[in-house]
Amino acid sequence: MKKLVSLLFILSPAFCCIAQLPTIYASGGETKVNWDYREKQTLENEDEAPFLYGSGCTEGPSSSGESSSLSSQGSSNYFSSNLHDWNPRTAWVEGKTDYGIGEYFEVDLPYGGSNIGIFNGYQKNFEAWQNNSRVKKLKVYGDGRALCYVILKDLMGVQHIDLPPNSDYSWYRFEIVDVFPGLKWKDVAISEICNYGCCFNVNTKILASSSTLSAQELKEGSQITSVDPSTNKVSADIISKTAVVHHNQLIRISTATNSIELTSYHPIYLEEYGLTSLFQLKKTHVFNTYEEMIGQLKVLVWNEQIQTCEYVSISNIELMTGDFETYSIEELSSGKNYIINGFVTTTY
Image (tube, rainbow, N blue to C red; front, side, top):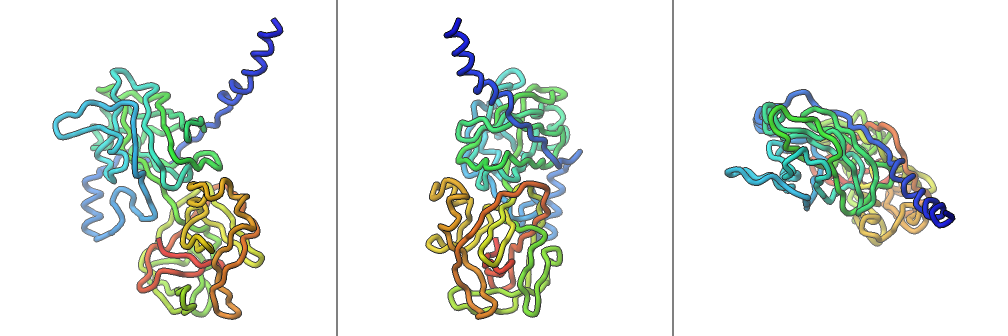
């Protein structure tokens, strides 16, 4: 009896952890989408951003895998590679004869667990979306560790989720737990998955020739200051393209005199590492946590008093959660580097 009690005591934390997995609810989605029409409109407007996303600052996985996939039909296949082909009219479809409970796909998300876009169902057209089953609930793993459950809406278009804080892993598994049954087929589909990133918070100030602009004032045609870090030369530049995205996780990077709130994968200049992001240093295990970076990294800033770029130590890094309206400058007319809250960054 004592052995049984001891065994239950040992196992109870594991059962407790399983029961306490957080549940994440997706936002966004659209009732009905005609992707053929949307692509046509994008081409007619000569928009360089992929019609699928509507704005840049978006990346898809570079590799994927699946537990099963529906057999190819004619020229159409249903492999997990369809999840990152920039085309919502193709899809991964699981290969089981029932509703695919327990089946999964795996991807390497470039920006980790923050602001993931999922296109639920087979979005080839509205009829195909209705006839095939969609995902209602997913269980998400990061490098084999159970992270959370995700509840999706029964909608077309893109839905957004943010995994729990510090969910930065190399490989993610999305396992089907529950579904919305299709009108005709049990086959369960996901059309696309991506990350939205590289943005700074709405309270950011961008250096211009005679003053500063707020993030909300940024638009095509706005004039800001660009800088060449190798020569310290500054010049007036014109914004050619911007993006606005909502995020639920940001980091605040502070030095002795400045601070900036941005996504962890927004590129900044770091001494010894060049143009990179804190997320990339963490993902590649240069540092295991953001806390380890404090006092160990120097970031490039613009010293307004002496009109020069210089590296200064990062004094604090703070993870922020909430609903943040974020902005990004994707293109300048001539330069690439610009200054936000005193930090030197680049178009992306």
